[in-house]
Length: 397
Image 1 (cartoon, rainbow, N blue to C red):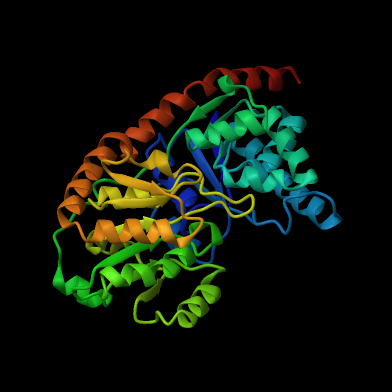
Image 2 (tube, helix red, strand yellow):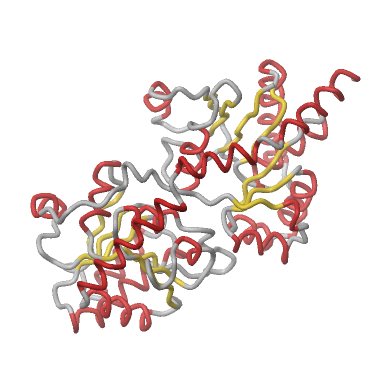
């Protein structure tokens, strides 16, 4: 019987979770796995290039809860379609991209059909659910019904253990990773830097969706202090999101239009070039209400390209690096510590080079997708007994 990955987040949608699922599952035996993914306007072109068996269906719900008829209808419709597909393709196990909403669909199917499931847990979605009595109840129901959980970091494991009372033996850690054959170091290239609009300026780069927890605003505010030591510093931002307008207004109000560059979403080739040509990568993340950075794949990608990294002291970002050899973690609730650390690093070229080389070695050894796919294959191998139990129960019915 097959295993089905159920995830709203999957390429061509961008983001760390989307890439994580794609990179791992495309390296697993395709005869045993298939994907049910959320819809995207670019899906047709992407799906044609894949050896994966991908079925698209609407998985973006108006609400993760079930307190109104529309939400109940959304969950019921999605679960019915999944049930038909599962019966047709003889699916014996479901992998849920998140606890909510995908995990709730799987929990309903387990109640109806006895199909076992596991859940990937990223951290931030659990904190979000904790802020709602309804979502908290649903999340606990999903967690209790899962055969086991996959946490993306030790920090997320701690959230599950300490805040959601999940026994440690039911939690397995599987880190996101990077393609170390595509994200590689490259020498400084004046032509590429000119194309990017960087020239010879020292560049601090952030890659990621423009969300409050990412801390772009703190890096912008930190530039006043950084400029005292490095007058021509440039802060380049790759990504788009709901904070774009606020960050643009902040840049203008601070008089920093010549020192902040919004590159928006970029193609994969250009993304790698940004990593390769920057001088320092920063993800100045912080906790924003219940929202945290569960891991920080962009920090791994930057290190794979031989760049030193700097992250906020929040969530699971510290697990992406070997402190202080490959990067540093600082308090990014305000701009002061961030500014001082950025200026110190940019003024020490030799330290940047040594740290970058160490980061490349660290990532190749610990976060290459091939290594992580083997870990996933071994972990998923424990499903065989669960699927056999399901087959026996189904036959008895």
